[in-house]
Amino acid sequence: MRASDAPLDLDAYFATPEDMRMAFAMLKSNDFVPDEIEKLNELDTTGVEPLRHMSQVMNVMRNDELQGSTARETALANAPIHDGTFIKVPKVISK
Image (cartoon, rainbow, N blue to C red; front, side, top):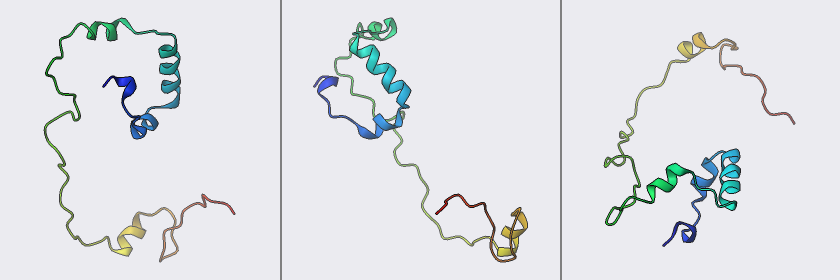
């Protein structure tokens, strides 16, 4: 399957900044291929699997473990503004 026939990966698409997507689309529509990319076409990739991850290690996240929480007094001591019970923060949503 050629890259142009592959289904669109929307996560990757939207993870790419819009200005880069637009620049790539403009270059592609004018059949511009940078020399560095063209040089890659000279490589023999027969039998080479596509790279899906940067390493062989998969899912190296730790298990969730129940831990105690921060005491209210400790949290309030680190807060710039509080009322003794809650941390006060600036309003970010207006009605």
